[in-house]
Length: 220
Image (cartoon, rainbow, N blue to C red; front, side):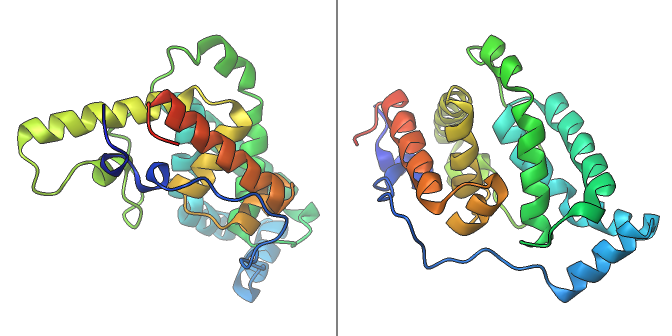
């Protein structure tokens, strides 16, 4: 049986205590982001290209972990940016652009829940999918830099077990765990993206982590 310390850090930590508040705050819309949105609202293709270039990799990585399939992630990514372009005029500006895009992406991903229910028992996640340079992939997190080939093979096997367990989580719990433990978002940003309370975010993360521990036979 694998020890907790050999798995991704969030899985080795105690589940978060459910709370109704947080010291973290959702990031506000910056002046530069407001100007970028003004350009998109005015029909500027250049402004929209800036938006896509800045956010396509983190959005794709989020969708890949939530949907578990590269083709579905790419399709929903395209739908997300199309929705953002069409809906820029109605954006309330209650959060930063990243959180707004994540909100759209998760709504779009939710449309794939029927797909998940039919296929989640055999869902797979690409271990070699490209990730943004500043965010280590789960492969990088799990494989020791100086590990010999045998150790790396063992760690990759554990990684596959983690990803398979993640893919089997209920959609709402999977989204919360991915946004917090893989994307590194604050509770407030997750709450803003999902349009739920911080307490609900923490509850979903705690329950999702507990389910992962149970699936991986880790101590509570």
